Image (tube, rainbow, N blue to C red; front, side, top):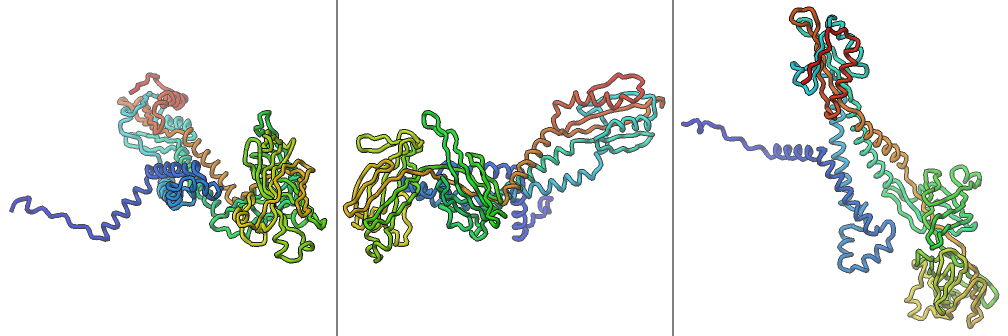
Length: 540
């Protein structure tokens, strides 16, 4: 039998052992700093579609238009959740894996750093002359006295003094531990920041509401129903909204000569907290990027537009006056389109069927500064200097009593096609002008008010986001400014036992290039109080 025959074949690892090894290796790979950096890059890369593609949570109408314009590509993008990026399964998976990776990477480093803080600096190397920086002096004082003077100059350093054979004394000094501390604070704050953002998305909500200016009725944020658009976090059911009431007193838009908006300003009054119980209103001013912060909410001024006012006088003399916002179709000149539906008084038409057949609908365009191409209305400037409307007046069933949702800015064309709504007139009107229908109904254009679009944002974690962002920047600054340094000093008597040889060695754990001059200055300071026989220095 040869030596080769005596070799023992490796034993096959059992299935549980292989599964344990696979899990251990997977965990090590996931919790490595390289994996954390890759996941952080992937998270930033995955957020790009959320900035380039319309998101359903912000504007579902634009998403529908985007899909309709791309009948082949659009549905596939919808299946891949590119219109719901930040709530998609793949974005959530990257987010969760980044959490796990950062925590698994940082916690062991925190444990190691805590151990390092309790551990004495490493002993002095045997041969200091092999270090990148080395100095040697000769003192006529004893090793103990020289060590005491050198140690006194090492204030701010962690110092460990040791004694060896033949009267040898060594000093090990190290500083810069706060560099790793700052690094850990940075990464822990990053985890906290991501957690606070996720918590804010779960417990927060955003609501958009249009409010007519000039002392309109305003709104109170008690239920989601008061908002024109409401987006709630996964853990918000809409029953615990912070009570807040707002009335818009006025609105002013400043424009440049070319019609470009320069600043939006709105004077408001609000109630929150104890003010609601005392019925006390407080004044405030909203501007772009200057929100109202109250009761844990932020109220932003996001946009504005115009709300035409019409008065309809029915044949019996009863009047109805309505003011409703119309949608700007041209962001430069604020040419707006919309519709107004008015229900006649019940006394004029007691029967519900008769009343539905006599409802009035007004659909058309509003121009804040009218400009006519023949009979075609357009707008030449966004400010309201010469308002006018171009409207179609309909009579019939507007769908107010159906209970079905309808567009705020357009009529249901099916009702027009079915003859349930019949066009009565098409006319251009300026404030104070009116049109009289064949049955005696009079429709008068009274002018327009300005409306503002307010966004109420509630984020219970916003203060923590700020705290973690500040501590993250502070930790990063500390890790960049502070440098790790190690210095060793060996003191021993020379061959004739008359003098003390002082050897100094330095090693930079960071920023090696800038350590030479700093080490020279440090040596001068350490030996400054020591009586040296000569100051010849040896440098390696």
